[in-house]
Every structure is written in structure tokens, then in C-alpha cells.
Image (cartoon, rainbow, N blue to C red; front, top):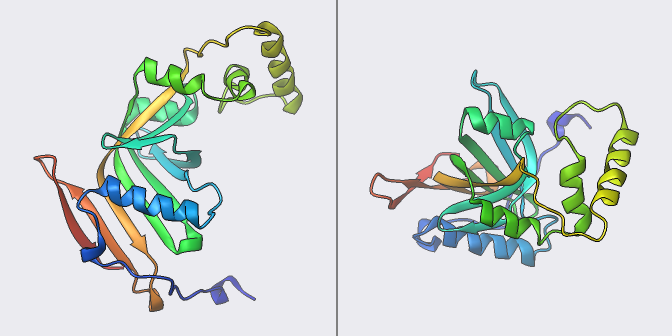
Length: 212
């Protein structure tokens, strides 16, 4: 079968304005809980898109680790490619691909670093190997091979054996403050439902329907 012949008509649900919360974070929480209930693999996995100063985009999958009325939080190495690009331009897009439910959530906004206290609290909630790997991995840098990573991990294991692992100075969180949040529900014949929350100048939200 050719790629052109691969198609699926979406028919699980629809999305009407009357069914939406007035607040995008409450609507996100509702859909996230439904994704969890459906046993979606890694429901907190999201594609994070950043760009260079010249506008060259890059994308990768990261994990959402917090969400509230202030925004969507993830953690990373600040020296990584995404960290370097965020230093140049704070504008980002997030995509939550809940394909089993024929849904997507698309967020556009700006990313800012969370407080050091917030980063430290999350870091120390991670499993010990994950704490150590934050020291061992020079994320996005070229390395000579897998052996170099394994040796670096062994070195930090020896260094911090029996100790509380400190938070690396180059590691921490970002919070994405959304300007728009789109809830996308697949429908038959590619006439999908796309309802977007757009933040107004007074901080409130207006809901708009987009053509599919």
C-alpha cells in the first residue's frame, strides 16, 4: 500500500463551543484526564518547537511536568540546543498528540525559566539515576560514542555516592505562558473541530472556531 492510500476517517467524538470550559487550563485538565483514562502512552509527552534567531525551527518530544493557570512546565539542560535557542527567542509551540482519541492540543506562547527553587524541588523528586544523568550528559553536544556516556555516568555515580546530588547549574525548568491554546478533535471527511482560546490584552480569553 502506498502512503497516499493510508487514511483513517475520524469519528470518535465532536467538539462544540457549548461543551468547552471558559478557561483553557480547565479544558486541558479535562482532556488530559481523558487521555490518562484511555491509557494513552505517555499522555504528558509533547512536541516542543523552538527556533534560532534566523527562524530555523527545531522540534523534539519532551515531557510536561506541571500545568496551572500560569502555564505549562518542562525541565531540561539549559545548554542543550533547545536551551540555547530559547535564550535567543522565547517563542515556542507545544503539541500534545493524543492520536488514540483523535485529538491534539496546540499551544503557542513564550517560555521563561522557572525559579531556582521550583527547579530544585522537581530535580530532587526525580529517581537518582535521572539526577545523575543530568550531570553526566552534555546534552546536544557531539560525543565520541556510547562508551563515553557510560563512563561519564560511572564517574558521577562515584563522585556523588552516598550524597545528596546537587542540581546542576545548567539544568532547570521553563514555563510556557500561552497566547493561544487550540483544541483539535478529528471529524469525518477531514472537517475537524478546531476551537482556539486566544488571550486578549486584559488577560481574558476569547474562543474562536478555525476552519479545518
